[in-house]
Length: 472
Image (cartoon, rainbow, N blue to C red):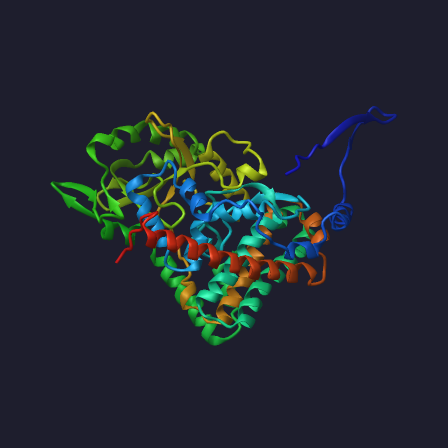
């Protein structure tokens, strides 16, 4: 992303009053710049994808992405990836990043999510206890071309539609709805006041009010109720118990378990936690200081994160006053080999800053730290459960998925408008559906590539080249 340079010089009038002379371009000028970029990279060119002749074997790319992970958890990762082409797509962000980097780009940069698929959106609580819908995974976030996120998101809708056994027509419709919603939203944000863009959000009240019919309204109200019930107080009795007078996290191997004694993770947590505390604003430190650490356990999460060092930290203020934090390892973004190095040397800080840039509101206890061990692993920390709700894509019909696609497209546009130049993006994508159709074609082509790569991957499991552990 280009950094703004504001003040050029100061002039004084005949009365000696200072006048700032600044160099800037109007929204109309930036929009025209975006439109002119079509002369270099046409919108139609985004439909194109052809694997390079020396494309690395997908299995080798995935093996490389497993380097540095805990070896005993890698088979669980592969098992989760091997269920369907969509779960494979979710777990192979590094593979798609490699492929997208070979496509033509106008190089209009934003803070990209980096792993922008439809399951990385959901509901969660703002610090003010409002329930909003937003992107909720930023492990791969990095400044990058805006269309990289759109291509991955659109592809995820096409692949998920195929997994749901929708017709080809329905696959195309869901995918196009997502891109159209993005294009229309980015145009709207381009015409808004800067602060209005920053304050824009999609909360549950808006979602319920915009429900197209009574059945959709009822479903959204039920989702809101379920999300609001998913808080620390409800999770606390499910994952903890009192043993010998001490509150502890319950082992549920292989997904939740206490680390072996020889790793000395509890001892190493103290300096990590102190560093994390210092990354919080002063008032949040004061809040955190009301609690004391009670227990720590390893927790296997997601698909792409399996094998990285992730855990849960149980803190208590009083007997029935818990706080549960999640600590996640942060590694090199999959985009970095292609989009350039991060401005942040600490990957935990990279994730936290990217999240705050893209989300309309972020977890008030979001921070980062460095591990105490010899590897000096990077981490970020947030609340484990705070009205978080993820949508079951496999249970959606084609109409429901289309509506979900529109909300995801709008949300991504809002995130890009916060960190990037909405006017320039809008000028490039234009008012017609040329860009929508191009991305829709790319999504179909890459969905086919994903299915081919999935077959190669599952073949490697069957041959014994890689080991996968299937969960019950």
